[in-house]
Image (cartoon, rainbow, N blue to C red; front, side, top):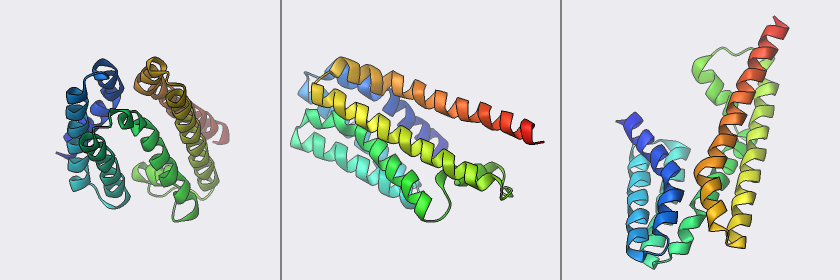
Length: 181
């Protein structure tokens, strides 16, 4: 059930900018979109723990406010909010507990060598930089009123950039492991 709901939230987030673009002049459709996204995030909050529950509640709240305030323009801030929340999550992990990327790495390799920890901390910093860049560009596109590029960037380009960062880090890590063996 968790996997299915996480998949639904992920798919909803990817198609969201395109649905917003399609319905941007239709107040009733935007309200329905906001309610659907709020429901997805509230369901995600029910099955999540700790910080992810809090993030889910904040995002659901954003959509609920947008739906009932009839402020369709608030909906364009969703991708920005996600990036700011992810930045807060990753950045706070640098000061409290284990860095986020180390937590992910320990899911697969619980007994990480001590030599890997500075690298994982640096990768967490790189992700923080990515979230800052992403949020900043989204804010600029919104401020310029360039909704065509906002849709393309938030619905496609940012995911491609995220994939490049993920894939590039994985390739680099594999190269470093082979180099140090």
